Length: 114
Image (cartoon, rainbow, N blue to C red; front, side, top):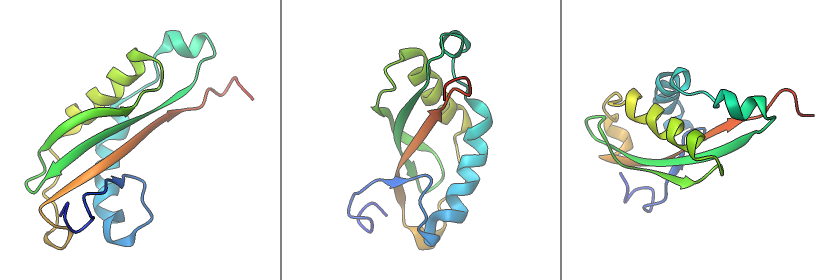
């Protein structure tokens, strides 16, 4: 639970083997639900937003927020919306605790920029 991780958020792309399987299921639900805004892509922009949220024991989420903005409000809104639409997630496996604080990076590297 949050106490087990020292109230420290876990990155969704963590290499910690205890979380990889559960977080990969979350990633697969969230991934198809976001995109970089086309108007920004056409202007050769790129960016990364960090979204933070807490997953409750039953898979519901709370405290969904932008932890670090991309600098593009439209992209930030799309990332938050993707997490909201993907939830609820599977229940947290018992060995992982009762809730998990998660940081989820959404990164767009424009292929037209070298």
